[in-house]
Image (cartoon, rainbow, N blue to C red; front, side, top):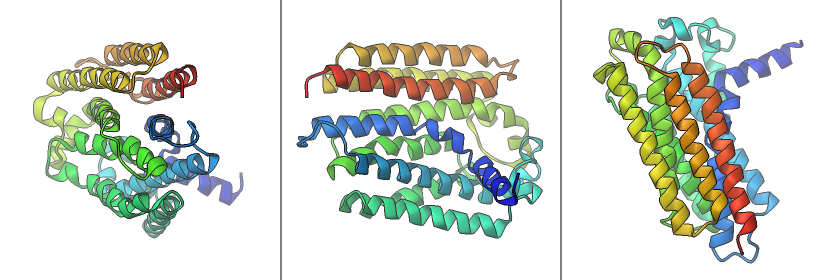
Length: 295
C-alpha cells in the first residue's frame, strides 16, 4: 500500500465515509419528490442536479465529521473507545484536519452554487449548524436532537436544490429524519455513559440512565414512522411507499430488540448495519412508488 493510499484510507476512516449512506438516501428521496411535485417540465431530476446534491451532502458530512473530531480531541484521548482515532494516534495532524475541514466546507458552498441562488445563500447557515453540533454535548442533554436536525435538514435542502423554493410537506421528512438520527444516536451514546458522566459531558443516557434512554429512543422512532405515513398521505403516493414505511418500522423494531439495558454488545450492529438498510430500502421503495405513479 502506497503512502497516499494509506492516507486516503485514514481520512475516510476519520470521516466515517461509509456512513454517508445514512442521510443521503433520504435527501435523494426528497430530490425525486421535488422534481415530481414542483411543476418541473421533467418529472425527474437531471444528472447535473443529482451530482451536485451528492457532492454537497458528502462535503457537508466530511466537514461536520472532521470538525467533530477536532472539537472532541481532548475527550477522545481519554475515552478508551476513541483512542484509536487518527487525530489521537497522530496518523493525521490537527493542522491537516483544519485544512480538510475548510476544503470540505468550501466544496459544499461551491456545490450549492451549482444548484441555485437560494441553495448558495443557505449553505453558510447549514455549515454553522453542523459545526455548532460538535459543542452541544458540553451544555445540553438534547445534543442528539441537534445532531438529528443537522442531518434532518438534508431532505429540505435537497428540495431547495431542485426547486429553489421550499414545500412545507417536505418538512415532514426532515422531522422524521431528525427523530430517526436522534433515536439511534441515543442508542449509540449508551456505550459512553460512564465516560460522559466522568468527563462532565451531557447525554440522554447520562441524565436518565440506559433503560429510560432506550424508551425515549423507541418513542422517537415510533414518531418517525407516524411522520412518514403523514408524508406519504400528503403526496398521495401509491402502495410501494406504504410498503417501505412498514419495512422501516420492522427494521426499527429489530434494531431496538438488539439493544437491552443489561446488554449493549450489539450496539454496532444496531447502529451501523440496520440503519444503513433502513435508509436504502426507504429510498428504493419510494423511488418505486414514484415510478408507478402518474407524473
